[in-house]
Image 1 (cartoon, helix red, strand yellow):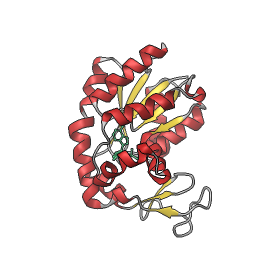
Image 2: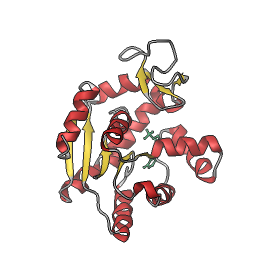
Image 3: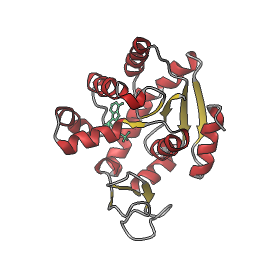
Length: 216
Ligand code: AMP
């Protein structure tokens, strides 16, 4: 099974696609943003270190993130492939990941960037609602739940992420352009990089990703 990293700006659909790919390929979906939000809620050391950066729409320092991923990749369920969503986000993170994988005798098989234009992202993020229990994403206008603020999948409560507020969204998009976009070149040079159009219905994006990784 593949070891896959999903790249793309906030709001591109990495979470939606990561979850769908994990189900389809039966490998874990590892979303660093979710791990950090759980750590903040639990009040752990990682959570306390990460919280101010998340609230500002900035990146959590590389050493914290590399520690989080190092621990997660050592879990038994990560032996036979996984989907990384939200990691790596900087070139030093990508270099640290390469070193970690080499030490484990593994390598990344594919890096897929989900491309969506900036104006679409701002609209998507500013209306986004997320289920507190299962993490499914909705949009107030574009894909509303059947019942107000209730998840169609599991009945959980839907909430707006604090960092989806418009000003923070703009910082997150700027940070993506400056710090994460250079990864496209990094992985292009490694021969792993593919890009798919993310401005389509989720099922079509999923089909595009599966085709890009030779699993369709
Ligand atoms: P996400 O849920 O992927 O949008 O991540 C939410 C926030 O968590 C980001 O805006 C960052 O503050 C932080 N974060 C998640 N993954 C990383 C990472 N790989 N490097 C640095 N910060 C991260």
